[in-house]
Length: 306
Image (cartoon, rainbow, N blue to C red; front, side, top):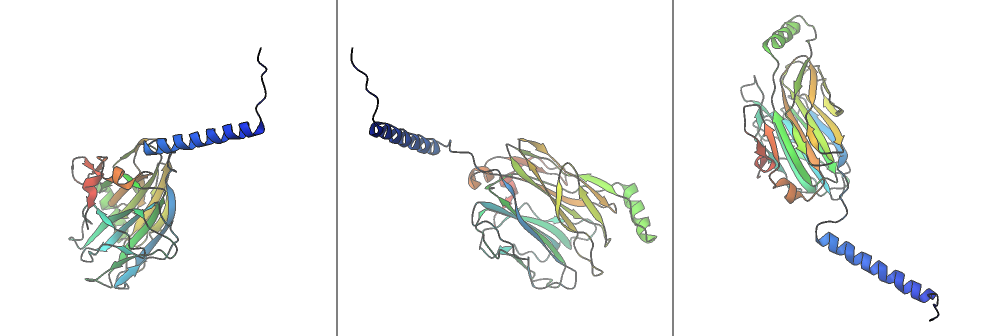
């Protein structure tokens, strides 16, 4: 019989090194085949809200600065104010902003005011990050603009836009309460839904249309309020509230907002996920905007080139 000899230390070292090289090669092959390690789940990043009262605005309206990630984030900006101040946003890192759908005009203001949404996917960032709007037509006009970073999110998976209004009874009681100097009754409105395919950061934005100067707007369904401008100055302003929810699994989600006094509200709901921006944004991911009886539309149809 042949004598078996134990492996030497050098032989064990060579075997370990060979196994390591093979593992690296397999990882590289998997990455090239599209089966790399999963992306980090998206998460809420930095955020701020710009608000200028009516008559006290400036021609260049700029948000407070925040420290965003150098790369890998998506940025969301919404703006409400005078419709003739129609310029798209710019930011201090020269990102490319795309409009999401057409401007939505407020009910009861003869088209003078609207709300708009913009996104910058796979954005550049860093310290001192600001977003600005040039208000060329009505420089002193009111404006409200939340600026939100979604970290580790290359994909805008779905968008829902709607404009629910309260019933005639709620609107009438609200007007009477205003006349009598009382606080109007609350009303709950519900957004359209978005569908995700995995972990996602959901962002909900409420733009009320009441002429009141003080109000409340609270989200339900597990959403957490992160920005609000609801106690307006005597000069008036554009009320707005922003809420977020993290979801760990694929599903269909919506949000209910309860506001007082009763009022209609322009609602947006966004679902951001990790992933390559082009693959997600230009894929046929479906969502709805139903302030009219609109058909289901893809995220690509929400993107308006600027």
